[in-house]
Image (cartoon, rainbow, N blue to C red):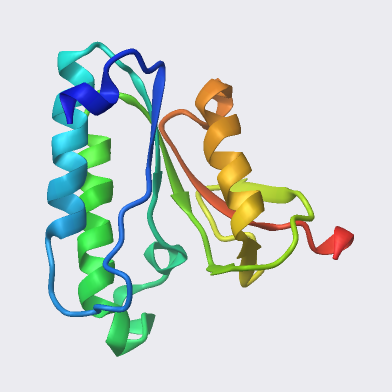
Length: 147
């Protein structure tokens, strides 16, 4: 991890399990490793992909996503206690569609159910140098006005 992080000014973390929805700590343990490496190299800014399901009351998350959502919550807990300049990005469904620009909302879902993978990628990079997003949970979606 340290070799990957050397020379970087910020970090983007997008961890997943592909289609495996079984119980896991892979993502949260991976994030903890990244945080440890960042601290060792004095890198302070990180944007992390979590899930819009974290905006839901746990009982309203579809049952098939309970275990993955639990690991996303563990990731968020690790971020909050990290003392880094973190941005917790909670996207809805990530789609392979053209970019339209992104819209964001702090602390809540935008109310839209999709984001282009291109819009999401752009925000991950953009937000690293946008202090208004530091220590914030960000709901995000593709701009519906441009679709």
